[in-house]
Amino acid sequence: MRNRLNLNCWLGMALVTLVAFGCAKKPMPEAAPPAAAPVAVVAPSTTQTTPTTQMPAQEINTVSSQAVSDQSAADQAAAANNGSSPGLKTIFFDYNQYLLTPAAREALAANSAFLKTNPGLQVRIEGYCDERGSDEYNLALGERRALATQKYLASLGVPKEQLTTISYGEEMPLDPGHTEEAWAKNRRAQFKVVR
Image (cartoon, rainbow, N blue to C red):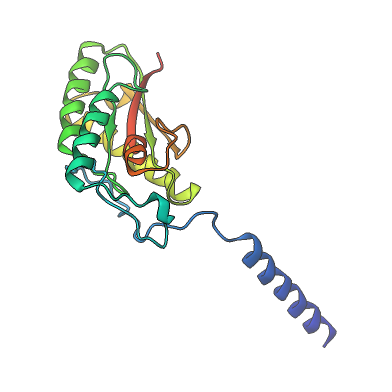
């Protein structure tokens, strides 16, 4: 009887500990991307919004979607090489996506040509996310972005041995802001020459 009481007490304390310390610091996105890494085309967009239950009211974008799209394209064009090594272009992703956009495929074609003419270069593909979602989720999504990028470059003839990948999740944002425009810049894969 006493052993059973001790066991129930320990289980109760374990449950309280899990509830108290096991909660994520950020809300999880509604749906996780599939485990496989298909390569598809998706253009970066700043017109997507999260439900108002996940975003404070002051951050809800009230600008027309056309104005946001025009600004996003200009921002992304200006940031095309921001963070990547010279000769290599940064690519961008939609919210909660790791599928390649038409603009990303175009940039990767240019990156592929550069890497083929410089076969001695070793390049690290770094996957990044915006600040929404848990640390664990963003690390996994950043990894999927880097791997999808690596797979596409390999399909264009870049030797896989020339490429490595890493995920930084939401760490090291290009834009520290908390707006759709900032988040669109931070959902990216960039390229670093490591040797």
